[in-house]
Length: 318
Image 1: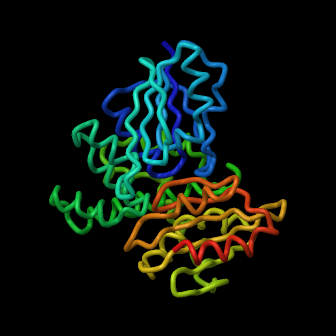
Image 2 (image 1 turned 180 degrees about the vertical axis):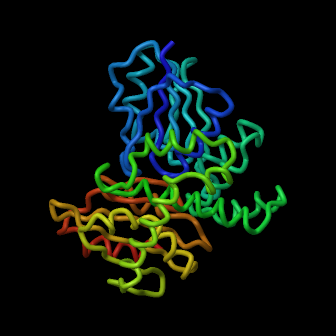
């Protein structure tokens, strides 16, 4: 039997898969991943037959056709995710664990499936997915120290930071390599203390955030703020954690960050207000390349001539 692990290249995808493979090692598994916004990952394995495929932290709805094709080719698929899924097909070869509730993530779903065996990594994944309150509550239940919570938060934020970019060249480390580095550590606190890879991410993050601190809002209304970032590698890397930081600074407001693509279109990240983590996905799905989840969503390519329309709809939507 061939084994293939397909996972989002952000903190949530990496921490979810790490938990699963600590519980059920598959050292020969083929890894399929990419930048955080590369959610059509199943397109890379459309010709695969007779394999065990595990899919983590990418939308079922966006990959529906690929899933149906892979099922027809006698593949066994386990799908674990927290994005909007739409209707799920019935197949004895398909097992799904999908929960789109705005206060969960794929790492927490994996944690539940594994009955908390690797809960520390689930907490790191939740911090990386901007679920700080949920992660903190779980950490309190485990009686973690303030220092331990701080380290798990930083691990999550840095793994998430590394996932953002338009191409792999934007990233400090390809997500598959980062997963393998993480997977060498059963204990996240050993990872925090010993990993030179994590240390390099700490350095890159600090440098990129220096640039971001000088940005002012393009639009600042009662219901939301919009920021535009330049077409630069540092901006593409920082956009996700910068969006999360903005959301925490003004939890009653929605936030959107805009990145200029090479073709003049905009890559949009949207965060719903932290006081009401809903609506980001429904807003972004109004546009052709939009999707995501209730609390955080995005549009991969917003045409330049739709910018004013987006700004108007964004403020009205929230």
